[in-house]
Image (cartoon, rainbow, N blue to C red; front, side):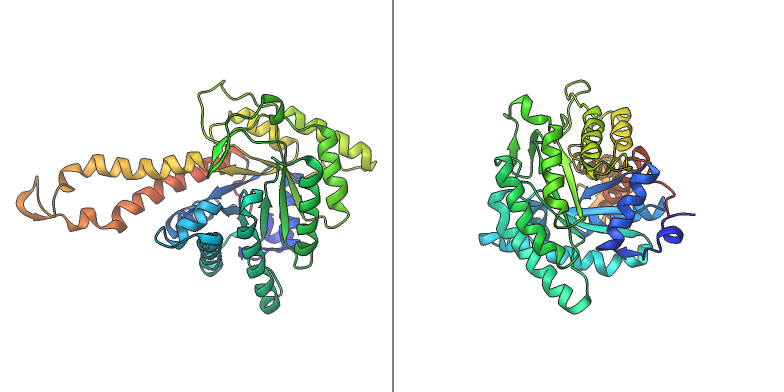
Length: 360
């Protein structure tokens, strides 16, 4: 028994009701799915490989900066053009290749602040065009991060976008409360500590308003989360707040479901594993992973260089002889592959931490 037999999900990118079924299944069975930030076909392929090897669904997400990088840093990003085209290009790559990895994939875009809304609009336009041809959106879901705005404005803008997204079966992820630290140009390092903890009333306000439009939404609640990685003890997470939020919403709904809200865990890199497990038990079905997989990718390259250093100083000449060629050592396919293997190992670790193993 597993996702394929119980939910009848296809391999490859899933959308709409299939995403909803997957999230419900994860919540019911007490596991969450890592959302891995990818910036290239190499990091995408490493993530897909990892999920395939441990028989798990996976979420691949693209940030605004990561999307621009995918398009090529030599391309102008005026009007968010490079970010839009990079995200669309990555989405088509993922759609083309993911079926052959034999796993369900949720294709998601990460933090979109108010100043980046043209990027969001460009992706949404591509979703609509794809829907007209294929009956489903290009992406599975998108995230609006308007947490720096007053709550009422945050919710109001999310509602307007969710109305458009509901017409083509797109999931919306929204953030209420602020994730600390800095990521991809969004700097919350100076945010007051009180803003890092969302209140139950805030969660209910979001749930009440968005659920009138669609059930396809997730909430990134702040419970002390911080982007980046820090020494143990420096980040004070309070995952028990998520339990309080679920109880508050359940009471308001007067429903039997003890976890009516789909929660998202931001700032997951470097978190204590027990806190991750506790957060999942309170309805977290998605956890973002970026900083740790970035380090893993670099570590693979670093390890390769250190082990082959004497073969990487010139095109010809190494410890085996002054006339010996080194092409097979500096071939990008060789050292990039080492990065991929290291990153894939870290993605597998994240899946194990979240209970997302042998789920297919």
